[in-house]
Amino acid sequence: MFENVEFANPQFFWLLLLLPLAILWYILTRKQEVASLRISSIKGFTIKSIASKLRPLLFALRLLALAAIITALARPQTEDISTRTKTTKGIDIVMAIDVSSSMLAKDLKPDRLTALKLVAADFIRKRPNDRIGLVAYAAESYTKTPITSDKAIVLNALREIKHGELEDGTAIGMGLATSVNRLKESKAISKVIILLTDGVNNSGFIEPSTASDLAVEYGIKTYTIGLGTNGNALTPITYNRDGSFRFGMRQVKIDEKLLKEIATVTGGKYFRATDNEKLEEIYDEINKLEKTEIEEFKYYKYDEKFRPLVLLAGVLLLLEWGLRNSIFKSFI
Image (cartoon, rainbow, N blue to C red; front, top):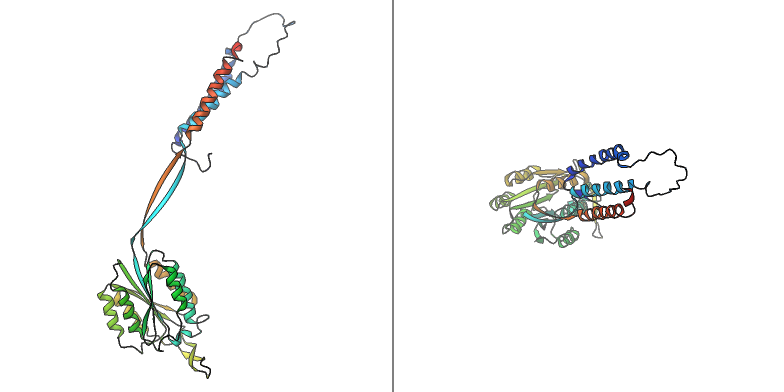
């Protein structure tokens, strides 16, 4: 009955200090309440009554009743909290993913594209209140998923992203422009693009600077990520006869100057991911930088528990009164 109970007025427990004082007063005054008769001898008296010995039970019942009343005054209660949340500032996010052949390089494990998809999936799961869309680009670009709040759709689309669906190359301007196009009509207070590439802009008919200006015009912030180790990486360099890639060591070239310019112009930030751990840290940092504001409402319901204590005190006092006027009447 009193599991997880809290007390609204715990100051009333100070009254419990009266109980030991009452016990002391009772001990000191008890002899004065008992009638005495002096006789020369009690020989011949055979009174064997247990009632006189149990008379302190009446006082004990009063003390228990008083303790129950004091506890009831402290107002024991249980608290039931129900919480409702309301998103006050939503964020629309488009993740632009480079799917050129170089994303199969093995400096990240098992390769750059697979590592990215795992980290991006975790990022998506951490954004339950935002709408997210996906854009894939190589020498050209396309929308894999429009911005949506259905994370299952986005995660499924992310799993399906692979190299080979687009002509090979790296069209950073195209990837950024397509992402801007997905967000320009958005009514969200905050609009964000996370653009990842592992190379240099070498394709497409839209210049990255033009796409950056479009992002600024529509109030879209862009975080850019350069993916690849420092130095050389085992990268696809040509095709085998069976159509599979032949890998070889090749110097990692990322146009960091361009990515920094895009981020700076649009109010975002540039990151460099040289391994799996760094890539995870980058997405965690972006997750912290772009926080959706949540307004939380808490409703408290209190269930008062003092009534059983008042009832107990009443029963104890009634019992004490009954015993005093029946069994113990002749001894009072």
